[in-house]
Length: 254
Length: 243
Image (tube, rainbow over all chains, first blue to last red; front, side, top):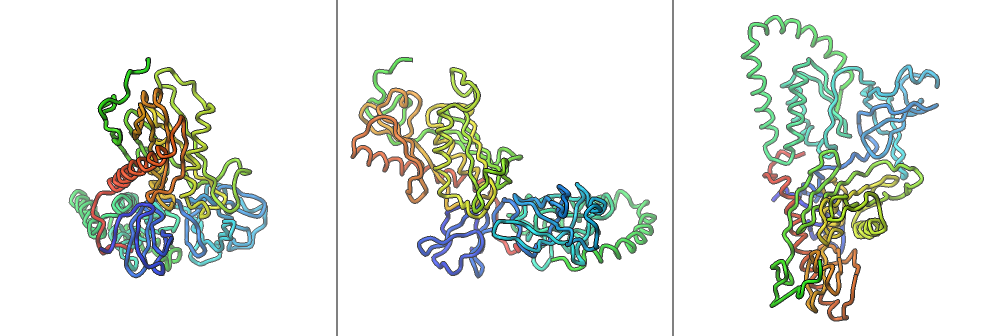
């Protein structure tokens, strides 16, 4: 059996060398630390079904500005630990008293975790082509440990979602998802994302979600046929403009 | 209510149970959707609800530990949980139960994984019927797992006691009030004890036998805790569509 639902303390393997995330070794045996899904391919690891986001360097996440201090922005990254964005990590050279002008309390940003020290001091940066403040669109929150499922194997799930909903979707490692597109398409994207969140542990998910999306759209197409032709022309124009900016923004996400 | 003449006759207790029989247990996981983890636990007439929040920021700041999470456990009895209205707020007994329960769970929680944070556990007793602290620990254990907090294992708890010179498992209210000894015990599935307290008198060999009895009780409870967690996600998980 490839996968199994396990509880903390459940025995997983006799080989301590295979122990990976979500496990601990005692008496030369591997046990689970969390309530989640254990996978036995190559290494033995357990992905928890719930849990907070713990930042690690290299994670691309979405943060919300909590506080503006003299030389730092304090950012809520949906973790027990706050992120610190130093003024020098802003892509432009700005003065300390101008900070609020660029990023004020409540603003959202796509940011990168540059460092996490032993005391869990989390340093963030915006100095990267991929990173920008978020000005429009919608944001939802999902369980951080399920993020790989939203992306899918080699990005298959997220590619399918973007394709079917014609929205641009960015998934932060901290479980925040940013979506931009037309209103009803964003609505559709959000419905599918919440469906994935509820059903991560059930097999055949990608196919089910694809079918769900097609059904939802199928109904819409039938209802709106006469209007659709006009919409399409406008849609195409809009898309060409927005695609340019968004490609720049999202470029090469994981 | 005065003492009943006999608490156990011909091996049958007042509520019809055999000496080594547990009271009926009912468990529901994830009943509070605002909490990170939660569990509703019924143990005989006891009805308790446990909520776990964390790991989260510690407020007040001075209570945080630089290299590990701080575990906080609050046991509270609702005013309506007992026949004679309990005045709201912590009293000495609640503070004692909170402390020992916290110490029963701490050894299995991987606190070092979350420096400078807090794991808050709240246990509210909605109805009390002897054994609330063990019910609380059982519920808290499940709630911690539900919250995704890494642990070495779950903790299971039950009480053993002596009534009319007979050792019995899981005392109810009358057996607790009129019995000769009451010993709540909490342990890991492999039998390592994390909580043991005694009220009353036991001879040395009775004590040893009582621990063995508690072990079987806790094993049975552990199976039920596991089943309740699994039930929350009872669907096929095998499949290639992962990662």
